Length: 331
Image (cartoon, rainbow, N blue to C red; front, top):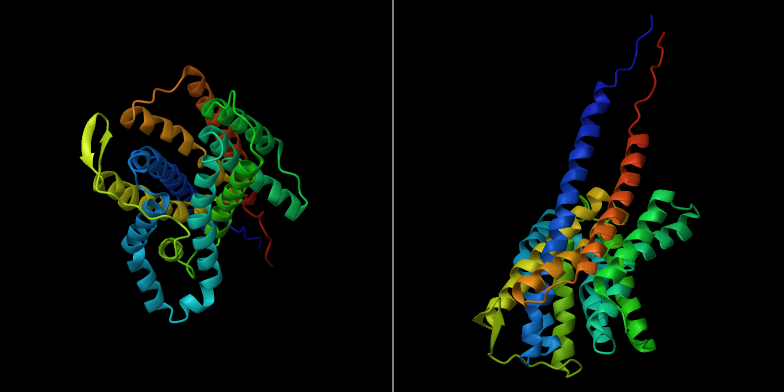
């Protein structure tokens, strides 16, 4: 008698995996959308007299407190949670949370914002190269073409024409890009044992704690004047943009981001993260009246095309893994 192993038991896990990836993709886009609103909202504060240290301290601290119940729940369920995961938590707080912002804004002070953005958002390409070196396995043609097209689109979007070269600024922006890579690599390790929200919350609190020490000892200036700023032609008090940046943009950005990466993988998530540049253009257009040029729309289309190529490669690999096993004859 021959009995075929039906593929039905495999269908449910495959469908569940497909749903998880679709949910993760939506989360990644929503995370990029949330993060992209930070710049247009925080820029008027910095121009109005707020120091970078004060703005980042409030941003990280408020977001960490909002997400802190996730840490408390993880500690309650796992008594040794902090002891087992302190390295990842410290690394997340130092690099994706604190380091990325400090390096980027420091680079921005030495070079045009567009150039600093371009270098920082080379992170997806750096991630592809890192995996290539680590595994000694060349990426597919789709990933390579997606990387080239996405970077070309990024160049058009940020418009670096006429920019001057600054060595220190370039090194700082590259450090920011490395921190962005760390964000995706560390987030990919989140799971049942290390809940994503607990990782995000604890990392934000670590970053806020370190920033508080830097401000306390005068390493980072701390100025937080009570000012009014203009957003979309409306005069609002200082706490309105700050509450948005801390309570919405940063909280949702990190929360959705760390939940998305384990679902879709660090490579796809990093390329989807490029959409943050496009969303930032939209927010600057709406709230700061900074109208994008036509060439920037063309660049946005190229970025989208690059992301699609990388996603198609991911779907092909997933389909190859999901091929059901052949029938096995049983005696």
